[in-house]
Length: 494
Image 1 (cartoon, helix red, strand yellow):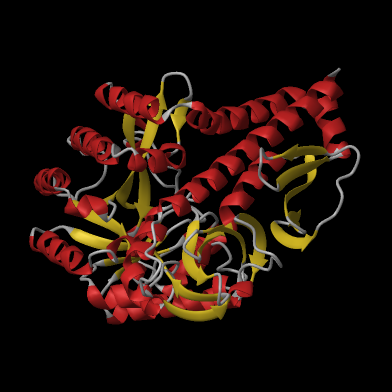
Image 2 (image 1 turned 60 degrees about the horizontal axis):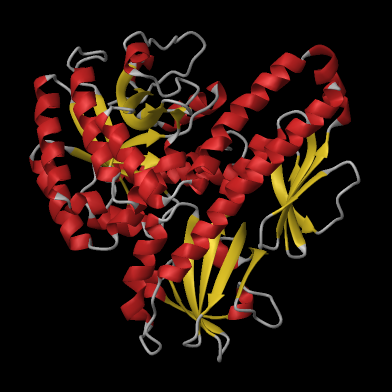
């Protein structure tokens, strides 16, 4: 009976993970469907829109436009001024192109990393191609795996993404074993299979079934949020958000940033939805939908108001930095800007420093306006950080164009900083460049002592990540104290 229940829970986990993948793919196709192209418009007239759409859409790497007659890709959101001339087969290897399609692909156009490529053939003879980041799908598969799944695959076309050691790799398609759980996505040529880990399955049943059940339920609760959003109508979602804002269900969490002498030197404000039935929801669940429904600013205004109240009691040391993420669109919204400047005035009174964190992709749609607003912020004492540095479209150009104060190195460069020489060289050069530009450097996603020690040796100014602390509600933040014993030391502060 226990074995049957455990197998059923694996199937349920696999189905929930598959539903999350299906939701993302349908959303991706929806993005392509929203792009209207003039049949004769040149790339320079389309480039800005492509960059804006690509930057604003989660898990999108880039968008391309091809001509179905010439079979050439001529425009890209990821290339300078959009100009590109490459065979369409570089991204789409289908012999006879259908009206739409999806496939795994790995080549130079997508940074020599595996990616999911979707396309939509338009009546005007052009082909829209979206390149989706594989890391998003790896994370979902990793969540499904746990300890009871030996092998998990995401099958698309004649290739499959399969776990191998601590990573996932692309391999030729193989048949699922008889005892595997297989889930096919509705009307999409995509399948997810999970091969059971019999040893761990038996071990969990015999010695630790209650814990296995608890871990499974945690994941089910998390993934159920995606299903809930998927089944809810857009108007219903918007109404729920508006009601939740009024009830202050969207609350600020604070992730400590560690600096000089291993003490807290600031926090980053992160949104959480304290849903009455689904529990505390991560931003990945609701941010995209909130932005699409034009309620993200309302959520942010509520968070700022609550953060003002939270910080009035001074739960962090004087002169700490308070980081807040903003989107490019919010830079142009006067109510949001008014709230930011008022928040800054309150933080100044409390002897705190406001730092606005902006992703570089979000600045490309109207760089002149963005530059003007960033300068106005600087004149008011607000510092600005370039967030997720190194993974956008034009990192160096953004550093040259905009008056940033901080550079936040993306987690993807930190994950293997101890063992991967290329990442070590890249990060060292980022730090050196930042020094020459008089920028402070923050490393995101620090998850181990070895990473923290190595980054300290490089002279990183500030570290942030789960090694030091997860994001905390205000009550826990007030009690937070990082234990410096056996932790990284910082010899290079200035």
